[in-house]
Image 1 (tube, rainbow, N blue to C red):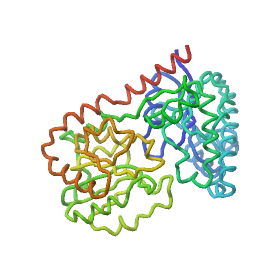
Image 2: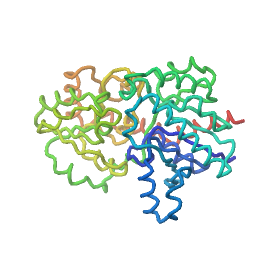
Image 3: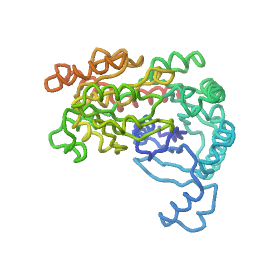
Image 4: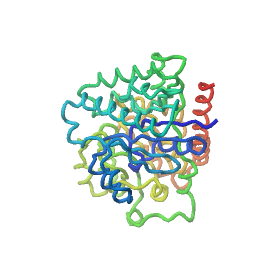
Length: 398
């Protein structure tokens, strides 16, 4: 049976960082109707400009109830008008709570006009709390992918997001968690509904890094020396910048390449040290489609995350993506990856990180564990994970 799934996201569909939302919803959309509600304010001025660019009737520029709808990867992506970011500094928790309620009010109007009733409501941001029930869902799903109370943007007052998540977990018919830590933390709120379905990667996409006909981009091809690389959000609250600096100083003949947007969820991230190091190359954001070609140039891929209140519960999607390339992988001792420590190299200090990278470089050309890494990535694919999720959804609906 075809369902209508309304995804209350925690990011924009088009922000260039493909995470759980894009991977899952684009696959679910092959068999169901999916509406992805973008997160974050969309100023009316931007909406009017986008409507003009699309050649829509002039009068629609001034209807605040109507979302801007874009079809992408089979998903209906919805942007609702909202205030500019500058207003978010006025009573931040109260403003954010009001922002969720405003978006839900507009969404209800849209669903009524579109005659959509009894949808499956799939929530990613716990800020919606019990208010998600106002959409009259046939099934309420909370896909818990992060410990939001540990995000820098909520550190001044985490109590409001903690309470909303408790309310959401208790109200949900299903609670999916992406790591063992999240599962243990959330299941007490709704034991019968909570499931552990850990993150995976797109093995087929990142296998392109192993293909002979994949061309390495010119900017990274021009970098001399062995390359140790990281791909992901360059945010100080999770990426251990000190480890990268220690590696750069200890191995001046090794190039360290960092690919990804800066300051996501942590605008105070300080890049001064990385920018000053001659052998660290900050390439900035690259599209998801381009990443396998960049990873082909890596000799070693690394995930040097800090161990803190956020990363204690995180299961990085990039873990299986890196394994799919066949490259040696060095990680910090993330609790959620403990079951896979024997397939990679694990560091618990800056000095150990340097030593593990040395070991990985020494074996990069002929690494006996390469085949096992690739096999692990292929066993942990998005298609299999989505099938798991939808099996649970179908059972709950039944």
